[in-house]
Length: 143
Image (cartoon, rainbow, N blue to C red; front, side, top):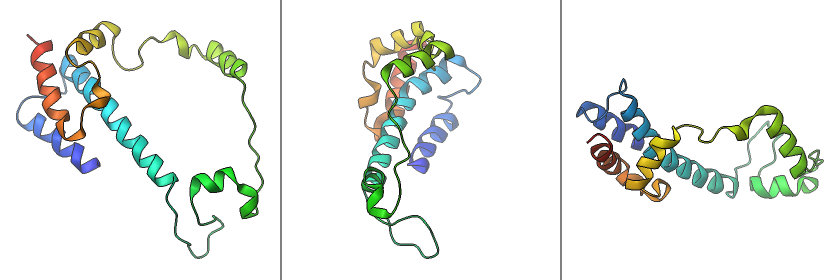
C-alpha cells in the first residue's frame, strides 16, 4: 500500500493540487488520508496476526498463527506474563497524562467540522478514491 499511496500523493503534488507549505492543504490531506491509511493498517494487522507464519531456522520464536500463540502461550512452552489493566487504572493514567484534554489529535476542531460537512465519513472512502475526495474537499474548503 505504501507505493499505492505515494503515487497518489506525488501526483497531487506534481499537478499543483497539494502545497506542503499550505496549512489548509496539509489539514485536508490529513482529514482524508489518515483514516484511510489507518483502516488499511488495521486490515494488514488483522490479516498478519491471523495468518500462519513459516517455521524459521535458528529462531526462538514459535511458528503458527500469532493471535493463537498470544492467546495460548502454554501450548508453545511459554508463560503468560501479562496482567489485566482496569478501567480505573486507565482513567488514572489519562488524568495524569492529560491525554483526554485534547479534543482532536491531529486537526483543529473547527476545521474538522467544516470537512465533515463535505465528507462525513472519510474512513469509508475506498483507498483508490482518496485523491479524488481530497480534490473535492479542497475545492469546497478553499472557496
